[in-house]
Length: 373
Ligand SMILES: Nc1ncnc2c1ncn2[C@@H]1O[C@H](COP(=O)(O)OP(=O)(O)OP(=O)(O)O)[C@@H](O)[C@H]1O
Image (cartoon, rainbow, N blue to C red; front, top):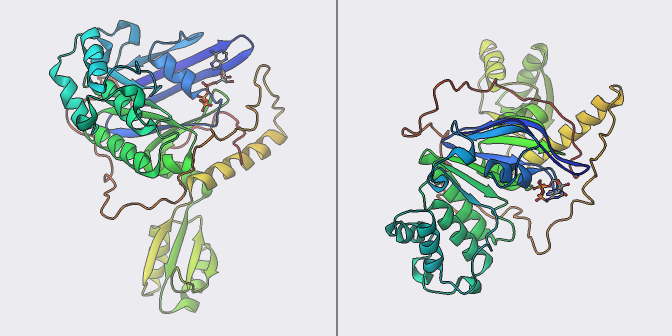
């Protein structure tokens, strides 16, 4: 578990992280989401003891990083994949890392196997592609078999195969009971990788919630429903106080209704009480992108009358540029047979520390942001 309380970091006039509190739980992938310059890397560096907070603190388990004995056994991180001596082989790099951290040498071959680098372990790391370098970085993070893993923008610059590999690895690590905290400014990638989200903007917490609740709450829950008696169905739902829109037949499916701000339970019970047969009843979830657009517009409305003023020292990150050469993983196909880990059950073996309380459910709307459109 990672527990941040009041975490604050100021660089001169720039408030990079501003009174940030959140909890990252074990046994699931938690996405750390925010636009460029939101403060994600700074927060991760503070978790890892590489930056000292101006105020507040962060704990891994129940200890601060500085108080961990042999930290690599507790927390592994991929911050910069190219942090490796270019003339060392992958195996030599990992053996050096293991020796420096008093970790057993046999673990080197184990982690090379996990990340699929066994066959190239003798090659110079300086000649590795970005994808291979990422794998080597992850092997290093896994050396101590830590219960907590941090990844800072791990898919930046990777091809679709590399992105998919990282995503599957994170799910696997979470299924093993580890705490997996992964930062990204890519909403689409987080939507399929993370089951929980910590969302920040300009250094402040916007939301901590499940990915599903975030999209539901921000984009509103809608239900798709269809039956053999559409006229009666519409009348029954409307009489039940629900807003109904017709969806004409298309390649995507036969004609149906979209019911707004409703649950499948409410729609099903109204239909059942009227004795109506249904052929389809499904919750429709908005995309994470839609959720963020909704969030932004809400903030604009909220700000209109509340006297909100821009805090000093919050420069707008200029233009939120997409890193050069980074392809948006738009719509790359999910390979057949790829199973989404069902429900991220809490695995045995990483018990929640005593006294840990589940954060209150629902969204925590605490701050404003300007998400790039
Ligand atoms: N060492 C530093 N000195 C001064 N300012 C810094 C330093 N590190 C970060 N900042 C500033 O703090 C803010 C947050 O930066 P940070 O890199 O943590 O954001 P990020 O969310 O990780 O962004 P990105 O996705 O672009 O990496 C930015 O305004 C950045 O310019």
